[in-house]
Amino acid sequence: MKEQVADRIVESGQANLQRINVALSQSAIARARQLINEDFSAPDIAHILSSVPPKQRVTLWNLVETKGLAADVLVHLGEEERSQIVASLKPIELNDLIESFEIDDKVDLLQELPESVIEEVLLSMDSQDRQRVVDVLSYDEDSAGGLMNTDIVAIRPDITIDVVLRYIRRYRELPPMTDTLWVLNRRDEFIGQVPLSKILISDPSTTIREIMETEIEPLIVSTHESEVAQRFERLDLVSAPVVSLDGKLLGRITIDDVVDVIRASADHSLMSQAGLDEDEDIFAPLYRTIRRRSIWLGINLLTAFLASAVIGMFEATLEQVIALAILMPVVASMGGIAGTQALTIAIRGMAIGRIGPANRHALVSREALIGAANGVLWSSIVGLAAFLWFGDFKLGYVIALAITVNLVVAALIGSLLPGYLKARQIDPALAGGVILTTVTDVVGFFCFLGIATLVYA
Image (cartoon, rainbow, N blue to C red):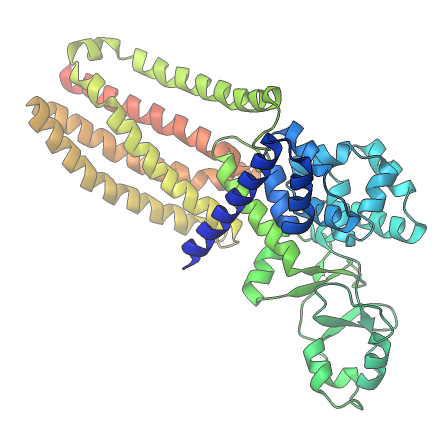
């Protein structure tokens, strides 16, 4: 069912893009403008802008007529696509466009801009908005402070529900995603919360102190975004308070911000396996894409030369037994797959907070046992196949032993590498695959050809 819904969304997006392309190809600008401003929603327009080359993207953006629609489109655009659009706007135009943004969305956008542009945009804001944005900008982008929204509704514990309801009615509208009111003491320290649903069904004469929930643990402003996401997932939160080190309430994080974190983390894990940026524009300028990809191609080339150097050490053995050259890729491939499986499990476990120093040894031991078991199973099969293929018992023995050793080493390296890299402030998702491939290739070739040299000597 979920796959069918996803397919329908993809088909709808492609259909909208096709309609725009037809209008542009026929120079029917009025038709394209009508589609964008009347037929498509902001997410639809953002999807279209992300799916066309940069020049066409600017043309379509200029067809958006209302400020509200343009602002919503900016929210839904990817980082690189949004940066291109924002670069074409003057600071005062940008501030006018994002005036209706929530504070966290304003901060997210400003963090993508050069320092000089940020200063100009801040100067064009009113003093109250400027101060709130500057306060959030002072926190790390990937921390609870960088994620939080300062639009909150706070109340005191000694007032009645009737007073709270009269207080709430003074608002033109509540901040978006408001499901809870935060309770503060006289020093503005967070002491509890009251869900709006509880306020609506309780006796108006009841005080907030009688119905507030005090067991909630607030998020410290410096908490990393990955831990924030884990907290929301574990406790099924819709919103959570953010406090300073001395307990003063600074803002709140809502589930929509956490979904963005989870999605960005998933994109990062996927794209990093190929050495790519999760925010990379599909239609980014060629020179930028070539530069990014060339770096990792160069690193891969160096590791390939290292593996080739290991093979070159056993040139005489290869000349003596040609079948070794035919079977070498089998050993490296088996080790690569086994290592990738262990690496993926370890990275995912760390990402969701289930693997750390306290239980890493248990994971490594488990993966080593799995590697050994799979090594015995598949080395027997491959060894028998090699014997039947080439009629050489020694060759079957050599490749079987090499595969067993390589699978155990691959499992050990795959489970140990993420923790080692993270301890050295290196992204395991980005560097783990390259290092693992090099290790499994080098160990596989060295074991296979080294054992063959001893056996055939």
